[in-house]
Length: 299
Image (cartoon, rainbow, N blue to C red; front, side, top):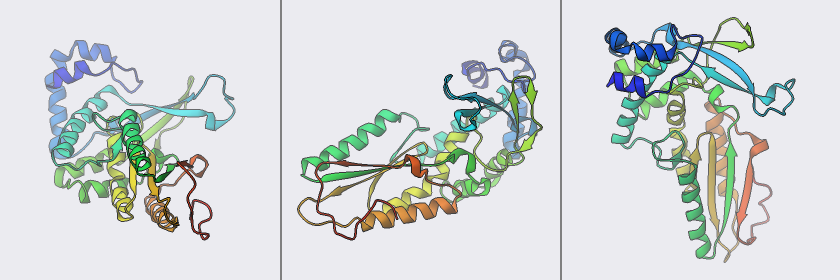
């Protein structure tokens, strides 16, 4: 299984690799048993070698025509060693199987989820809106996006849903704690490199486990939204909330404001924040008779 997994993974280049990835694949029949022993030791002891927790960050312009003097025009591309990604892939396969087998994944989520994509998200939301419109209701869609969500997640907060919502304990929980502890990164620009710095928060970008760990961190948010009875859908760091507006009677938006207040409070407690510059509201249908106390769309 390990040999098949290694050969299926895309060859990548990183200065952290002890040897070129293609060479590692070519000689894997010889080094495979030793590498498998290392993998089994990591999983059995619940630890990750420090060498597997180093990251090279390379800033790249989002578009070639952007001003290179403006930092916000860059996106950080993280590179990890190939062997560390093999270890993560093994854990990812087991974790994904456990989540699917126990029905732990968020039902209304696409992105970082098997057989779910932007297409499935659009189909779900579009279908719900069309069904509401068929009954004569208008629909208000609120689109929220988080600010640098992957960079600000606290590691202890990230471990909490793994234990409380997913049920991970013992050696497995220790492995994830080790995986997140003492991570370091170095920034490379051209031939220049910064000194190594500890990565004290955020999910490892460019890693195999980063996306699914972020999704699990966001699991409790579903309970917050369900408490208010609104339909919602999540995609990566985006949250879509939508509600029908009855045209036959006056309707208050106060329940929506209460929901947004609770949502922002939960995000604040988890060191996450809504990017208000990207927040949008879309009305499908006709304007309805809202009560005079409703002004604006945010608490």
